[in-house]
Length: 247
Ligand SMILES: Cc1cc2nc3c(=O)[nH]c(=O)nc-3n(C[C@H](O)[C@H](O)[C@H](O)COP(=O)(O)O)c2cc1C
Image (cartoon, rainbow, N blue to C red):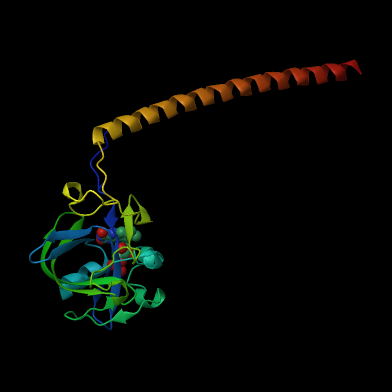
């Protein structure tokens, strides 16, 4: 295992993949966005980066508001579709059979089928080159009741959120820790496990090297077998030819 060098690119994964609803309740649109994230805690602020040529770009620039709708496995198809079709030509809510729900503080609708919708008001637009970064304040979070447990906490494991990595969509894997678990005093946590990173890396590398050597040996063996088979076939053919000649 050794690193190869690539030219600079956009390789930070996994990322959320969200459906951004924008426009007015009557004339609304959805754009799929992966260039998004939280940028401040108090006040809670986030961003979406949108290419200037997108239909939604001008809509958001004009209205100065949008809703981030988190996506789950059920919404994966619609998420992709809204990311390849333009609102200039199609009504994405209608085509994907999605329902509009009134926002608390904005004119644009939430996507009812999304487990969590985040209402955002644009504070600043930063031109970066290919994309404009819409920096926004989060003014409300609308969470689906179904995923809230008896203690009033949102159970993130229940809503089956999806993520985007290197051009592909994934569901989330199993939970392997929680915030601060590495320094927790309690010993009996089932998910608490300290990993010796250097040892783990070395073991994995040794395993990989050994696999590579085994594979190489297998390939070599199979090559030799093929050569033998070819030679045998050739000699059989010759025998047959000789027999024919004999007739
Ligand atoms: C997985 C995925 C992620 C995307 N992320 C972004 C993004 O971060 N910014 C962007 O401008 N376009 C992004 N797009 C492309 C837009 O969603 C796409 O061009 C869409 O058709 C624009 O819709 P509109 O013309 O209705 O605005 C993404 C598309 C997909 C499928």
